[in-house]
Image (cartoon, rainbow, N blue to C red; front, side, top):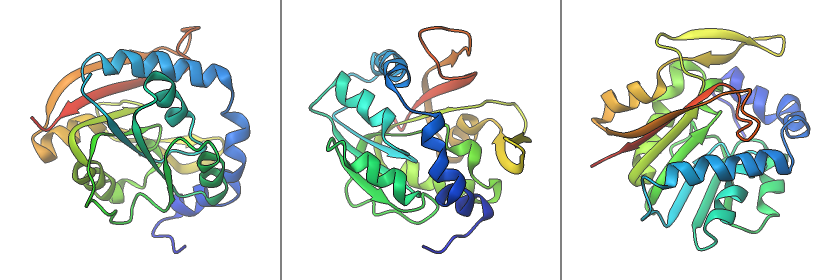
Length: 205
């Protein structure tokens, strides 16, 4: 696979291979079940979901537990993580970069990212935004670190690997989306272990 940015190479190779060992287990899945159950109250008609940057599939597993009939698809740049996710046999996993132009001939009721946009090179965010929009038939959800202005944060000793900004605001402005709901995940909440991230549920109409 050819990479357009240093960040892609970072996640597709050694660092990305090691990431799941720090982020796996039943606690995270249960936390995601609680989070998505809350979000789904605002979009109960969702029957298909696509995740951009699914890693080993913990979010998809949570979604499958909430509603087993969901049609699920995940896109993941790291080959090892994509293989692990595919072995869950709960949806289609595609090993590719979310910076690539994705096939949007089949659309999903909901598309989302969770802890992914923060690791995308800011100059390439528009490509991921476009994929989120084009793959979605109605809803888009982003759950990321929020900051009112763009800022770069050192990530585990690595510079230019974590970026915070108002991702949802940019999506709303770019595509004229409607804000349906939003919420904050506090790192000290014992039931929602999702760091200090903020989620936004957006709709095309």
